[in-house]
Image (cartoon, rainbow, N blue to C red; front, side, top):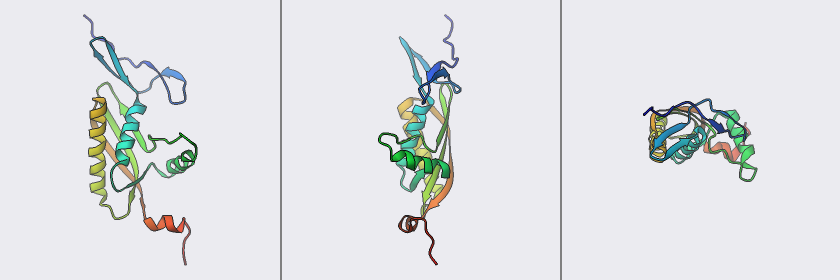
Length: 154
């Protein structure tokens, strides 16, 4: 009996178009059918898990955060994948998370907590093996920045 093929299938993208997927969707043959998990699903799970860690102020780099704030003003348009990039193969995932840390938090401990939470969430939810979680800290948020609304004093 020949083994099932692992070629990428056509999937619906986030903009609604249908076409070949650039990254392989997860495809596992189990008894009577297969299960496919799109990259965006893994990215959402990772984004939610990263935001749950104390000390994470926001996800994404500067431009992504500006677009995210604008998007948040629209009903139902929150982007849970902001700041998260994933590469998903048939049984494994590599995840990159870009964050803004709260000032005063030990960044090495924060990164370790993010890795642990993201790995636990993705592996338990999808069954994929997470090979690595890369954390990039783009900025440090100081609580006083919110109070001054970005203006500088004398």
